[in-house]
Length: 169
Image (cartoon, rainbow, N blue to C red):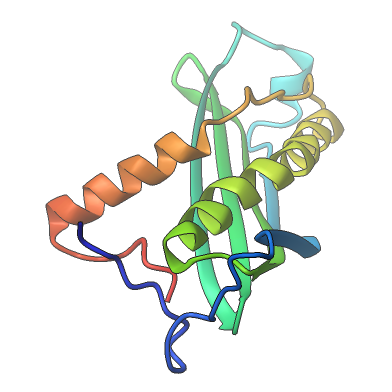
């Protein structure tokens, strides 16, 4: 069985004590970047045409801040178009700082890139909903996201390109 190295770059992964359970601690969460555009206002609000088509893109990135500490950024881009014209664009980079304690190295990517965005997603979703509502539109309620599948796709894309872009460090 092959073992993937995800050390912290300062001498290897932290040692774990098998008798202690692993922990994922959410230290902070914050809006790193938020943008809302209503390029056709006020016409888009006064004369709504057809129901807009909404395209949503999601990405998760993580970087090591120190031993057992990571910054995780959940990026959500949503673009609504009606009859080919943009109705609104919202972009959110929602950050969090987490600590991972007593976890084996092979479990860290799942904790950081799957569990962390799963925990903070409802908060990011609320920011998007409030931004669209405050922009004069009905709140955009994004369906739950399977972050494990998103990680699998990113890893498959990285393998296809011959890189290790999903590595945390």
